[in-house]
Length: 71
Image 1 (cartoon, rainbow, N blue to C red):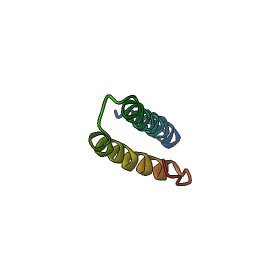
Image 2: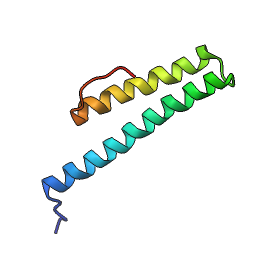
Image 3: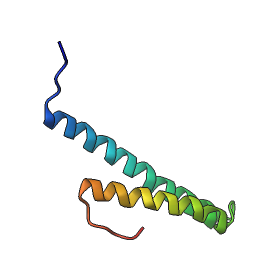
């Protein structure tokens, strides 16, 4: 009656999604830093977005079991 998904499949999907979200957050930090370096955005404006993305990065790294490294 119910479509049962094996536990290892759920973990694999979770790992893939979390890894993709981590990559997006890292790319967002790079994007904002590039905009600041180009002079397109003021640093104080970009810092809010960068800090938010860094919090997401730290959470995703913790979930995936990666060691913590400052961005």
